[in-house]
Amino acid sequence: MRMSVMDVGANAVRLVVVDALDGVPLPVHTAKWKVRLSEEVGPSGVIPEQSVGQLVSAVSEAAGTARRWGSAEPLAFATTVVRGAPNRLDVLRTIGEETGVALCTMPGEVEAELTFLGARRWMGWRAGPLAMFDIGGGSLEVAFGRGRLPDYVASLPLGARRLSREFFDGDDPPTEQSVKELRRKVRHQLRDVAARIRWEGPRTAVATSRTFQQLARLGGAAPGRHGPFMARQLSRADLRLCRDRLAALSSAERAELPGVSAPRAVQSLAGAIVGHTAMKLTGIKTVTICPWAIREGVLLRHMEDGGAWWAEVSRLGAVAVPAVQPVALRVAALH
Image (cartoon, rainbow, N blue to C red):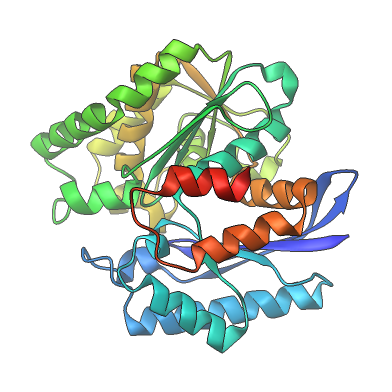
């Protein structure tokens, strides 16, 4: 069976086409269309009209590519930058009308569950009790579990793009005071989540997301061209060195470092601060960089639980959801 998943993020629309064989999503084609919403969306979070047009074009091309590769309609979702936009419903409606793609959003807790599922399948059962960290542009997802799905999830507004805009806007390189203020905020918001992870005592910790991949590369891990099966780890000590190194450089200078791409150079320091603080507060000394994350989690959940699950997630993601309801919706949609 050939299927695909489409991920609309802050920097790009990504498409993965896979063959579902023996319960494993084997990639046959991947593609990416740059949209750079992180540069276009201001502090209000409203997605401007020209950016909506870019999204329509990218989503349409991604859907066409999926069809050419023999896939059914992609499982299409958007992450924090669209989920948190005040004009989210208008954006989703426009994309649906113009492209025919039923793009949806999911609560951060659901994203954490799906990312955990992808990481669990990649790491296997011998990883034991597993902690997972994922730093996105707008949020940090944390999960812990002993089984297929996590026992505990949290989604915090500690994304690298969000924090860079809040604390480092106009300062390049940032001031020492702004770095201290950011670290203080991250420590405060992570306190309760970190206490839960310490109490659970994970045997293995994994980190997903492009942010952690780039930080691991900066810390000496093998480059991406060596393939997904190359073992990559990031220690807390190395991450602290990366954090301090990034803090002393401008965004242009960071973009010259190994593993730091130009579009993400501005937010790389905030990502390093969040990652190091999370590892320190949870007592985790080393994380394994996991190549499977939310896209693989969506595919796996669809393969294992069938189309009814995705239909319910899509339905819930197409209506306004009060901020107080994500846990209830997570239970209803996924269980």
